[in-house]
Image (cartoon, rainbow, N blue to C red; front, side):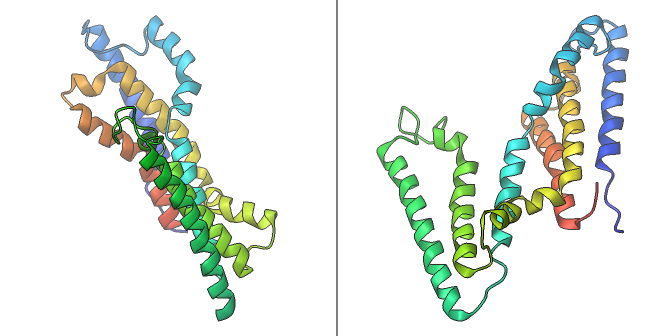
Length: 220
């Protein structure tokens, strides 16, 4: 079995280090850091375990894995005549969906109240839109091509990548607690880490385990 970087172990260690660091700094009365082992810190943590996980990009990750699963559903080409029919069906499905999105942009329904991309519904929901634009045509191709023959196979195709990356969701739970602890303790800001750099670090904490799990096809 191939070995992968032990993200779960690393995140647990970083979590413990962050908790201890906040406690040690708190002993010196530094107001810029919140002590996680104080009464207030413990109460915050008990209230934040589940909200921290739901605030993680679990939905975005699932959408990406769903989309990758649908892309794999087109992997068995069949004969040439079936391929042509499947491509026509898939392209028609994409054209319909793209037309709906384009109409939403031109009509302003998917833009902000000022008619811009920034702070618009499309900016907030670009990933679901992209998943639909890719996933639905792929499923139509698979159904027309004979690769997918029923609802059971469609569900299996969509969820196959989730199954392969299932252990990474345990890592995601630990990562959500780590990022929540870092946010509450304010340790990154106290150490001079800029907000843009910190956002990049958080992004890597959440997504790297899934990227490695998907590419290496092994447990994390």
